[in-house]
Length: 124
Image (cartoon, rainbow, N blue to C red; front, side):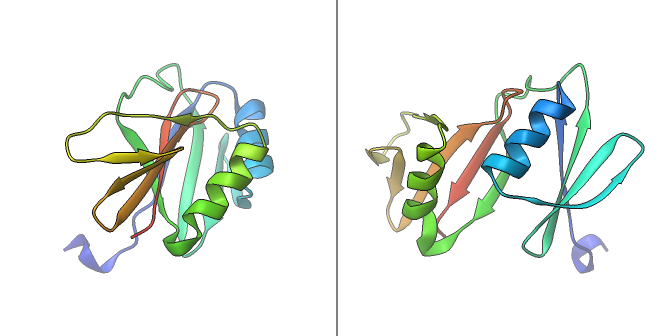
């Protein structure tokens, strides 16, 4: 039933002004719409919706993932140069080279937004 429709990531934030600086300034997302206190960003063929919530940042799992292909290393370097700190995790059978985790052919990196939401970048 839903397989024919696009899905969107909905991300709760604590402070819309701070979140906006991060998602637009740091991540480079483009505003597609603003309505009812929410901001919708265009990201490739997908959309990311930000809205304020008292529960922002309480999820201890990944909130949104971007598939960036062979640009992972360049994006990680670029975000690092903008002051983004990457998360480091210990997973079985996963090695780490700097901020990038390696699991076979898959390369991954995780970061947090200002509200504490976990975002991921993956190569595949």
